Image 1: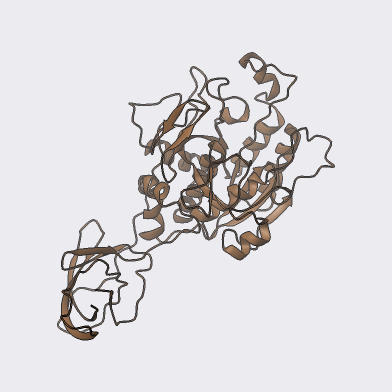
Image 2: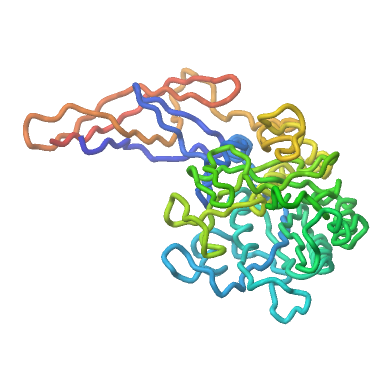
Length: 431
């Protein structure tokens, strides 16, 4: 048997995920798709539920990102060795064409002491866009000192960002890596914390990477701000990977060995979220290629914090009146942890978007499938039938037969409604 075709116009199920069973074979009706292969992470955190059953994509929300650079790296290449930049990302569908870049990396900035830009901000925005493709995006380069980051927070707030996320940490070589000196680097009343407090008071949610410094450094600086949600990293890529830094093989759902730990007595990090996600280009020249050879893996809390910020955009779209505190609490209180209570590495646990949205008082959209009636009607679903084995013809000839088979459509709702359908299929049978 070569193939089986359903000769009926194929449509998708829209915002409702359904399952179709044909005899003993089951296939999922097409629902939300992602611009990057992040299905494992989306399923683990309930993002697929928000996209499929609630129809959320971040429309009406603006997400601002602060990172090193966006489109200035001279060493940004895809898996084929071709130049990868903002223009190619637009053409390939990884980014929208209307990102508002307020400030990009500049070699002329005297406050910048770090190495060449890596365009990590563009990689972050790819992941944000994959989760919340309807959201507007803005970027500000945080390469530089504390004043640059503070200016970025204020600038993003001024252009209408509802959510801001950064992955910036300050590590001057002149300051020893000991906790007693870290508060001098970013004091509670310093410019970054003042900027975070100001946007928080205006109803803007702020997210920050917890850091990748375990066991050398604890979480420090503005990441400890109670008006910001700090996010650690849990691996949810496409397969196991080996890290030479810790000598461990990391599997799905495992806390990253480098994810920073909170200080004694603090409640940071707040939560953890996936890393090890795909991007279209290699950030450092060292990252392991993603299992899909078209992509590269992106590790660290620089991934998990933007991922969480994008989830927050879906939550805010669902409940536009939710305050930053309500969004933070929804993510904390519904997180899933392998431990009991708060932990200095896991925080309150892995974010669960499907639970967080319920805690904000938002219910899934009601089913649009009609109740069965005596009046014949056409219910369109998208069906993929694969692996059906038919008896081979005795002669070397191709036959086409028409038969009527029974389909059972099961809607994945709380009530698990079932419907019986009839569909005519043509079975093409080959020797």
